[in-house]
Amino acid sequence: MKYLQISKQIAALGLAAFMFSSCDKATVTAPLGDAGQNLVTILQGGTPATIIKDPVDFVATPKTLTKGVIDIRREVPTAAALAQTMTVTIKDDTAAVRAANAAYVQFPTNLYTLTLSDGVTKTGGQGGTFTVVFKPGEFAKQIYINIPNATLLNPSALYGLGFTITTADAGGKIATAKSVVVEVGAKNPWDGSYAVTGPMVDAVNPALVQWNNSLAGITDPFCSAHGGAWNLYLITTGATQCVMYDNTIWGDFFHPIWASPGNSGYGSYALVVNFNASNNTISSVVNYYGQPSGNTRSAQLNPAGANAVQANKDILIKYYLIQTNQPTGTNPRTTFDEKWEYVGSR
Image (tube, rainbow, N blue to C red; front, side, top):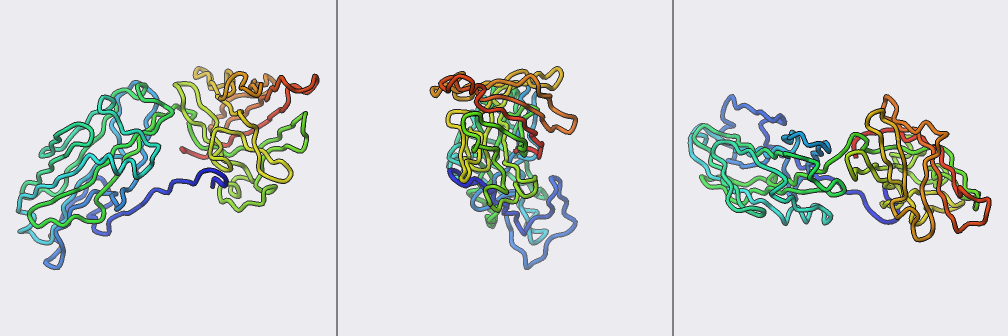
């Protein structure tokens, strides 16, 4: 949990109680009965829109999203209803994208293509409309999102595409599971969520120490599950580069610290980490805010560290905070000796 600046986004999981199946490929063995309704849904959809996260590797190889498939279904009560032709309209819903996350970038149409099931057409560009025609006996149609070259995406951005059912004829009733937003971000192999532990020593103010849940006395499930660690996000900024993001205290590009007592952090200081893809080591670190930043702080790798990604994706790293406006003999100002335990994707 971010306690001072930012709240976590909670993806709505409005799974429709009317689904044939939670799988991508559903089958119908018999009509649902005269008591049912002629429902139109998007699998995984909700009201408001469910957010489906489907990141792509930061590579030029084309990819078709597998999680963010827009699967439109009609769920019929009788064989007679299934024998009808039904037309459904779906909006390319830019408003749903903005509502889901104000930081989302509306996905530019030149960065993706769509593969449409037979009977699905689109008119207009961004913000346009899909027309979905179910022929007699058909109950499922799909819209697939293809990313031809993820290296053209801004790796520091999250893109959003929204899909919302707006109309259905032939007696169709739009279900609450009607809207999804697909989140797409480009990620390199080191992008992810990590648990940070390990000592830090500040030569100027020894009272400043590594942040730990036991010192802060905060009830946080992530910290408790990982030995009191704070949650680091490594966010892709290039093919072999990530930036440090504190997902526990500040919700920003900082390294949290404990100031005995109280949450703190070094102003204008966060790591940009450069990786060597050939041997999975860290080649260098610099300060996200400038090398040096306006308060004379720089980042520097400590060559005494392993500074490498382990087989289990944990990272062992030693580095310095250099601050040149400090008295002679106090540089490096702070020495970090950390383990970044890989937890999973962010």
